[in-house]
Amino acid sequence: MLREKIQALAAQFTVDAVAIRHHLHMHPELSYQEFETSKFIRQQLTEYGIAHQVMAGTGVVGIIEGRNPASRIIALRADIDALPIEEENAVPYKSRHPGVMHACGHDVHTTVLLGAARILQELREEWEGTVKLIFQPGEERNPGGASIMIREGVLENPKPQCIFGLHVHPQMETGKLSFRGGKVMASADEIYITIKGKGGHAAAPHLTVDTILCASQVIVSLQQIVSRNSSPFSPSVLSICSVQGGHTTNVIPSEVKLMGTFRTMDESWRFKAHQLIEQQARSVAEGMGADIDIRIDVGYPNVYNHEELNHTARALAEDFMGKEHVLETELRMGAEDFGYYSQVIPGCFYRLGTGNINKGITSGVHTPTFNIDENAIPIGMGIMAWLGTQAKM
Image (tube, rainbow, N blue to C red):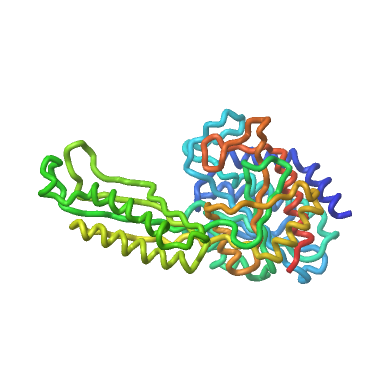
């Protein structure tokens, strides 16, 4: 059966795939700077005999045709960029680029898709349709590489009927997958506020506009946007994460900068909240005699898994792995630019368990000690290849 052949090839290619992951992990590159990563991906696809092209600067798009190529067209996506984090793991494949690390598992995502591509190419006479491989840059940074690739036509010529993507999940044990229909992850927008006023000596605050005090009032006041304006049944998060102002103990600064994020699962409420954030911050600042500049950069939309496609994918995963190994994904307020794809075509974004408590592999993503149990790699390769051969809308 095709399922057993995919599982056998995933096992056969594991040593090569782990070596690929180690290479990628040692040579991480930041968003939109993935030049060597892109080159490496293209070299691998060439070695596998898979036609491909460059898109969005460092993105790579490959095409694999099975029998009756027009009968079904499926897209499989991986992100390829890294994060500005100094790695603290003491492993032979530790990042060789100071201050840059694959701390979100994109090296794993890329490895899995390359492995799935190799399997699909090897078995192309045994499945029907076309699989489009999307290796996407810039997931970690606005405007999101997905939006750029879509604008450049990645979902056209040929147009996929649906798209799949996965993400490592270190809080889920290796050997497990998880799926969820409907809303899965939040939108993410960036907030930039500058408060300005007449600075002066801290001993004479009455002769100044206290921008520090004003900033603190703005921060506290903004919390009522979520607590008293959004529905308690619709999750939202508003966090101010950076306060920059002042440089000594006895000078009230003339300027304070704030930065933060707003996240929600509701696209309508999202843009209403933007207006409320601006109104609230402006009224507080101006009421205290300060000037204020506020900018909200619209980021990624929420990730929405097409219900029917998710149901199909979960059933296929249960068939591939066994029902006891397939779980329900929890709601997460993190963001992912996969949401752009699922706004255009049906999408399914699922989780690959990569944790192993017994091995001490428990660190979360975006931390300097993040790592994975590499036994998850053949599982990821196999399930992605299986979905590529079986899923349809």
